[in-house]
Length: 235
Image (cartoon, rainbow, N blue to C red; front, side, top):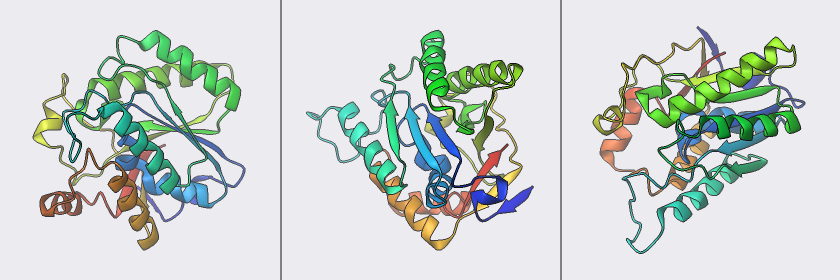
């Protein structure tokens, strides 16, 4: 596995056009905040597409019952994007929990964006969705199909899967969502985060305050999984 300290070591430059495509607000923070921030620092054109507003989440830390979760999570997403220095955020507004049922519409939506913006790199979650979330799997399947189609026409982008290291262990709640036997893709790149990157990643996670509870248990889990100090990818 190649260990890097900057996306420049895998070909990201100031001329790169990068799109992170994720199912829900907070998926970008969990998997790729350090990478997206460092790519932005290099001067790359970094954009973010989030397919849903995350309204089906069972988590709503600190949010009053009278407040709409989708509105809160959209605000959290824009906070995260600003923290990572992402240039633009596009919300798909597809129904949370039903990306598989909307597979054809999702492909059309993404194809239109890709043909317009012509990204060099697309980052998304690996095919098993890290812990088997059906939305994660459905989105990656759609992106894989677009990727294969474009490469057949010799007009493609480089696809980067965000994955996890060997220390990662999904929570019981996350594993309960899986409908398949989960085996996350093994990474071939580990991005070691600098102190500044770690600070940015923590701030990005804190933007998603309805989803992450920063208590001792949370910090212990993330330190054990090495999720704060590294990010893993399969190119």
